[in-house]
Length: 100
Image (tube, rainbow, N blue to C red):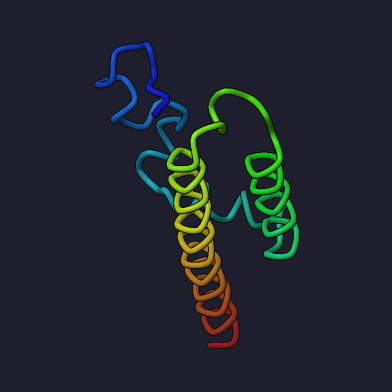
């Protein structure tokens, strides 16, 4: 199993989010889904799966490591579907407010 050679506590907290995004994480979701739809997301995830499946790089040589990567990608896809639904609900709520 591949492990990060750096301080693990550093990776346990958000470090890419700016102050506004920390206070309102929906900003990240909205931004993401203005650039990617589910079809593009699935395409990129497919490419990652294909690379992990066909690569002879040492990180992917152990079947258990590949299984972990595939499980992670499946979980990431499910998480992104949940984020997609949050974005969709937010857009629908905004539309309702505009009508009222």
